Image (cartoon, rainbow, N blue to C red; front, side, top):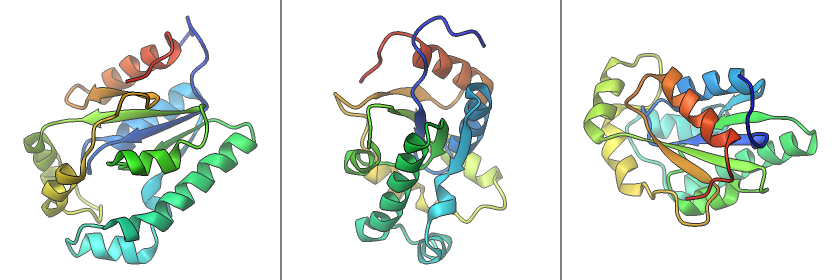
Length: 177
């Protein structure tokens, strides 16, 4: 895709509740940006994965070391001069604040109503995150706040359309919520 505006941020963090399509959109976006891809789930300690698999939501104490690992990963990408798309829930502003290690980080928050998320999770297999955690994710969810560098996109359209919309935002005028 030809850029018509400023270059995209070097790190895009695709956020949202479990089942919103972060990984699908993130992989497509990484390919379009010629960027590396990291699924934040890869950096969860085994305890967190087992806790979620058992249907128990993570608390802030569970998330703190994971968020620090993600922030270090993002910092490493920026220090190497790389580009990356990172997918993680980052449901609360405080979590995104940990990940916003540079002005080169942009948050793409995917949103959808709980019924769509439940339907997607019911059709998903091979992932440790159960549909029973949907309500706790929505309870923790804080929309992007004024001043956060990012944009909110609805997750109902096909992933290719979401990525095309996101690319227009990333390559257009400076964006903030």
